[in-house]
Image 1 (cartoon, rainbow, N blue to C red):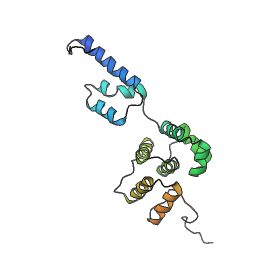
Image 2 (spheres, one colour):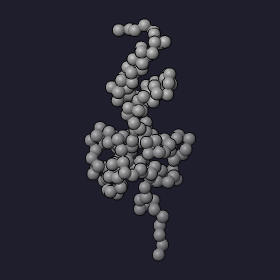
Image 3 (cartoon, helix red, strand yellow):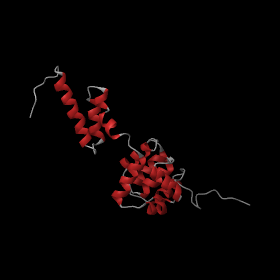
Image 4 (cartoon, rainbow, N blue to C red):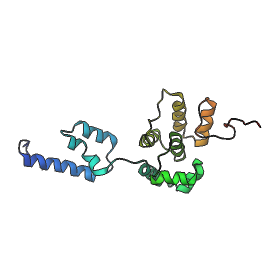
Length: 177
């Protein structure tokens, strides 16, 4: 049913705003693009932040949980593949600890995420996304686009003369007695 434009009538305007908010309550999987459009076209701060008031801030632990469930990867498998210490990874997955950038990258590679997903994980952890004008990030973007493993991406970084995601025996500086 289409209602006439009665924007001066506070009752109708309030009813429209309530409907607008309730649409957000139902749409928990609102895409970033649609949300951005709703914010840009909002008529008030309350309208612009209605989704956030209902759903709160996105958390790294929730994004990791969703990706792990989608890929059917257990924390134990992720510990083995990412070479991250068990208790530290469990603290990350529970939201008790915020990982460093390389740890996020290692987790993302082990979860075989897309570039967009990797950038989302990085942002949720408080870091900037991969930036193509930075050589190290360009190497990582290339590795993601080629669906490389964490180990392969690490080797590629070393070949390019960039800092690795993690130290290996061949990437560690040799110690002399």
